[in-house]
Image (cartoon, rainbow, N blue to C red; front, side, top):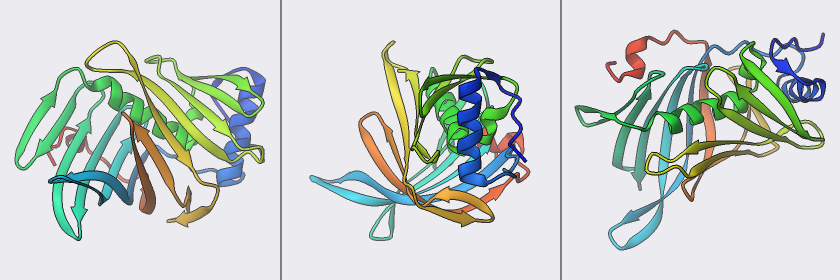
Length: 231
């Protein structure tokens, strides 16, 4: 049975979304309303005068398509160098280091973009009624969130597997657009019955992170306090 979509837009773009969903999940894709995912990888880090690759673990909590939280730990040789918690509740960005929670003024746009890029990564949130699809090529299309104007650009391989997702966001410091990119390799792994690429590259502000998913839970109960860093 073909994947059913509620999103609006041109026929070619809808067909591309349907095909890329089927390539990832088959004919019975999951309904993803909330998600918890943990990924591990490496990040360029300066330790004194040295530039080294440190280990990074990110646990992300998504409530599509409005809120997101990242819990980030950076280690070198197993020793924690940095722990950061960042939450976005749909309007405000919160950051926690130690026991102190601060509000990051003017930072909501990048985190909203991260959230929409994740919607493109997991694909099925793009089938909602508030999404407008438009084809941009034989194997590419844009997905616009008509509630806030965010646009995710998706590029597919010829076999309909997802190649990359890009979302642009205005810089908090100026009006220049910054590009957030997620690149997916072609190999797949099942984690808790959910299909993932075995490796993801995330690029932002000139830094590229290489990450691998290690655990995931679909539709866990997520309370509002989680995204304001109160729990």
